[in-house]
Image (cartoon, rainbow, N blue to C red):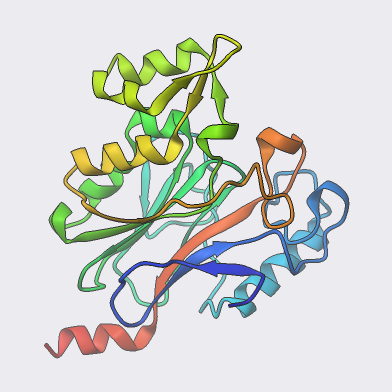
Length: 252
């Protein structure tokens, strides 16, 4: 495994390439060191361009992703074009990369069990509450039990303090969400982003859920964290299908 990216540890069908980049292996400096993929962060454009080139080469991408303009909403872009205002990308095409940028928010990757359909979603607490995961699942023609999901690097519950207002957004919609908030000594709450995502995926019918063992905040050597550092770079969660797989699927 390259230090530049972490492959998704999920039972995806053959030909699916998926994972999340780390902050290692790029050319950016300072708070963006070193593999910053975000062009909206204030980093030098030439450095971001070189980082994206390195990412594309190191991860074997057939092309650079069509980067979304993420807005913490619930829209899903099908066969996204660069700059689409959305927080998830979906495709049925070979060699089309679905990708989202993160730096504490949760990247959730999806694949149908046959490999025909793919998606990547950006799930911070606002997107989760707005239904980004449910909307992504509903974009699939595959039934939810036939969808596999992987939860990539995000901020852990121990590091993610929120106020009562955030807790009420979730608990007001589903009382069972209270299980994913722990009171702290400051009179606020520690929110379990991974737990909230699993709950919402399971409620949508997706039960094959993997990953969820990272903390971007607590691992500054590997991960950017907006909550920890403020000004920082962005990593990418991505998934694509190798071009040779479609033909195999069509010959079944």
